Amino acid sequence: TIYRASTTAPVNIAVIKYWGKRDAKLNLPTNSSLSVTLSQADLCTTTTASCSASYTTADSLLLNSAPQTLETPRTQACLKALRSQRAALEEANSNLPKLSTFPLRIVSVNNFPTAAGLASSAAGFAALIRAIANLYELPANPSDLSIIARQGSGSACRSLFGGYVAWQAGEKADGSDSLAVEVAPASHWPEMRAVILVASALKKDVGSTEGMQLTVKTSTLFPLRANTIVPQRMEEMKKAIASKNFEDFARITMQDSNGFHATCLDTYPPTFYMNDTSRAAVRAVEAINRAAGKDVAAYTFDAGPNAVIYYLAENEGLVAGLFKSFLSHIDGWQVRRGQAIQASSA
Ligand code: DP6
Image (cartoon, rainbow, N blue to C red):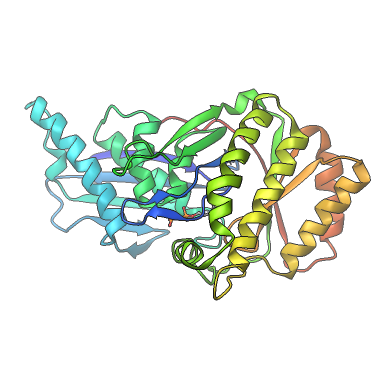
């Protein structure tokens, strides 16, 4: 018998950024973060996990048809956690097949550039964890699964929910309170839209894991950001979402992106994720907002040059239209559109 389960996980883009670990081994963050899950059908990872007593090779993973190693401490931590939860079920019910002892075969497809700062690790680990949890028939809710996904890649824990999601940094040393929770479902503010401007789909220069550790070690601005500014912003952002105040949402989003990239510049040696094209996108958003007389668009940049612009559906013409004509003057941009959604739970 071959046992099999499939799932799809969406990309999420943080409006309050996770940057910095208080425990690199357990992958615990220095600060809480908050994201919006995007609905683009073409921005997700689809993963099928199967296992069988008849599989003779060790656990394996194919990503976009290429074999990948599962022998990284982070992936092993995830597989170990899932197997031990399954083993506990098998212990309690001897009629269950001993799936926890079978080799796993995992097949994943990303329909967007891997590691280009498009949150591919987030959707990837979220899909991996949920596919295996489904295969093992674990009675886990998204927050429980987020604890496992977090160990694979921090931002992945937020992709287990749709809509508006917080990753609570937590305080416990074992990480048991460092998990994702829903701030609001997508249906609370369904007018939210995002457009992604792909400035470069190349692999980023400095990966997030490495980059954030160097920031924690060397940036003098970082402690202020992590300990004082971000905790305040988390509260303000939750209020902005609860009251559907787009101007506050936009201002906090842009300030947090700028603050995060300021700590990257303050890292020694400095890390540059934004490039000239990214800065042109910032100016374009500023021009749109100036013309509208209020903030109708908000940019945010992860650890790469690509921009994500949030706006409301009512401003689609203004933002996407103006952006498109502005961008036609800039080489190298692709524009994708999507809206915030509720991630499927299966
Ligand atoms: C800038 O989740 O990729 O996108 O936990 O080391 O895998 P690891 O880092 P990762 O970092 C994401 C950083 C970010 C901000 C964010 O998504 O909150």
